[in-house]
Amino acid sequence: MDTAADRPRPPTDTAAHAVAEVLSAAGIRRCYTVPGESFLELTDAIDQHPRMRLVSTRHENGAGFMAEAEAKLTGVPAVAAATRGPGASNLAVGVHTAMQDSTPMIVFLGQAETERLGREAFQEVDLTAFYAPITKWSTTVHRADRLAETTARAIRVATTGRPGPVSIAVPGDLFGQCVGAQDPPEPHVVPRPVLGEAARDRLATWLARAVRPVIIAGGGARAAREDLVRVAERFNTGVYAAWRRQDVFPNDHPLYLGHLGLGCPPPVLNALSEADAVLVVGCRLSETTTQGYRLPEPGGRVRVAQIDIDPGQVGATASLWFGAVADAREALRELAETPVQAPYRDWSSARRIWVDTATVPPEAVEGTGSRMHPWAVVAGMRAALPEDALITNDAGNFASFLHRGWWFRHPGTQLAPTSGAMGYAVPAAVAAKITAPDRTVVAVAGDGGALMTGQELETAVRMGAPITVVVFQNGLYGTIAMHQARELGRIAGTRISGPLDLAGFARSLGARGATVHTREELEKALAESVEADLPTLVDVRTDPEVISPSATLSGLLDG
Image (cartoon, rainbow, N blue to C red; front, side, top):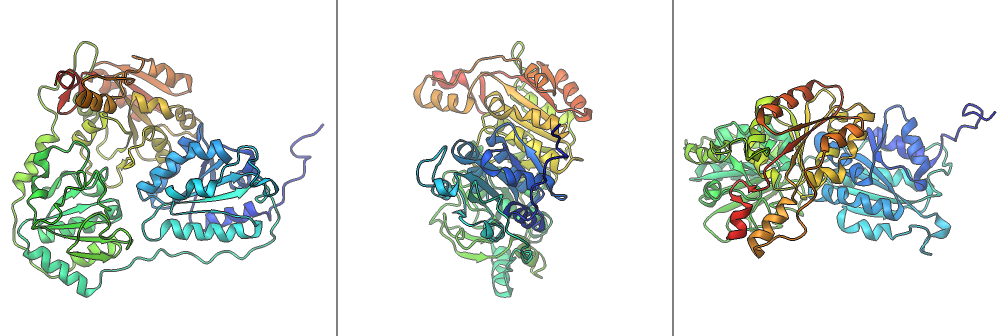
């Protein structure tokens, strides 16, 4: 009788094992994948490696989001692997998210065998060309003995300068080839350039002499949170968080002036519009952060300085008075230690404006009938969840209530795609819980995004990752419905079936499920979910009429 013990063990000196050693030596601990026949040996080598873990997901889209979320949380790349055409296509959404979010990721794409390349073989796509626009570097390896070397280079590219994803396409016959013993790669140290004395003094003098200086802090400053607070306090500057980077600065600090996101209330932007000095740190000044490339106002009286680790980002989207290529943490540390005295500036009025927009309004009652007001959902979350919970949020209009109503007081508490990708929240929460099992991890999604990748709840069950998923179910693709109502006066294709039994869907995957219609029911379900040893989906029936914090659907349709 043939048993696994009787079968010969695969060799351990293959290209796949060499790749696993390179990944492990760089501190990479997990590979997220839907296994494919074009990289059998790679999944086996990672699964057998004592310091790595293979996480099999239910869809490549989920694998991509999980790898991106882990790297965003830890700063260390994770691996996402997919096979040929269909697998690589499914994975592309997560890779694009990593590119727009400046997240390091190593992507392996199985390819047709070497002798069949170029013949439109089964599922063959030119993967190097396909992935070139959504990665920092895209390549195809044609020799097994070069795979480890290419992997080491990929890690350097992904983590140096502006971080981002790198893709390596590998013909299916290479991973299993024996390459013999290979020397381990030299340890890679990420360069952390400093400001230097001249630049530091120039910036310090400028900030001290300004009348109304503000800072815009992005993801590049996440690891420098304490130094950012010290700089803001030393120079008495107001601080804005870039799009979906709200945990970069404590939201309960008196110098925090708000989040530069979609639908930002115009009064919140006043302090930025009136600033005469804007220091941009670790932020690429994206379209959303700049409110459509309007702020800081180009050509106005404001002087803009930008500090970024990547020279390609300095001045890329805005005219600068001064630009510096430096690591955010090093630069802020230097500025914080500068012996410069800045005058007192009163930011209480600007701060109060943001607080007013971030406070649940009294008129946000439970809702109508069996539907909850989205504001009431956020209020229930604040009452029932620990304030240091790690929140992963999806794309959709529901998120505007979360962005305003949830205060990010602690570091490392927000994982959200600046790419605006739907389906992010659930896979991101799974990866976050696997990576940080002691954290309370809560995914927040709409019913549209939740049903794109919600099947990853099964992955959470299988991996022992008891996350909480809060779904705002209103039966709409809400963001698009809002745009349609505002621009066209009618909606098309944005009503989706509902209400669905999403709690039953969760239970069918082995998770827990609860359906709630009131704030009391919500708080009870959330409190129980935090203590549960299984993932929990909380299906909240929300009012589709409340389309955004500032508009109703009927009001827009009548508009």
